[in-house]
Image (tube, rainbow, N blue to C red; front, top):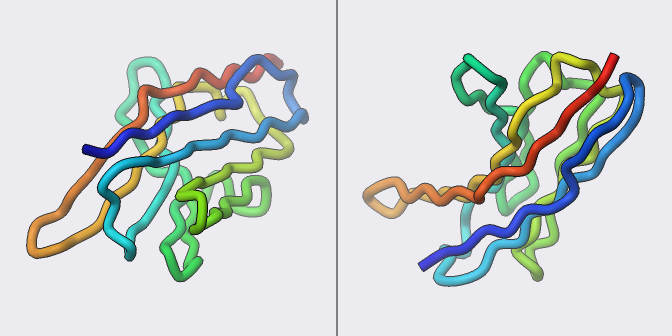
Amino acid sequence: QVQLVESGGGLVQAGGSLRLSCAASGNIFSFNTMGWYRQAPGKQRELVAEITTGVTTNYADSVKGRFTISRDNAKNTVYLQMNSLKPEDTGVYYCNVNWRRIARYDYWGQGTQVTVSS
């Protein structure tokens, strides 16, 4: 079983910063991708950023230049530094870890609320 524990959400004014953390534990395959997704009210969940074990990153166009994803492989922890936050960044942010070994395995955190006020 895999568990993901997120922290760092909250309320911030536009232009401010927040840092999200997510620690994964359990039976995790060594080569994996960890990432952050978000879901705004009435919208589908979307990818924000992801990073592989080999630290290759991928960002949504809407956050490029403002958000930075990083990870500590020894701790199975992923971070999301969010700067220059905008009201449209508001949503529930979910941590994800996934890998493929014949089938794809996906695990999710419980979500943390990020609210950006204008």
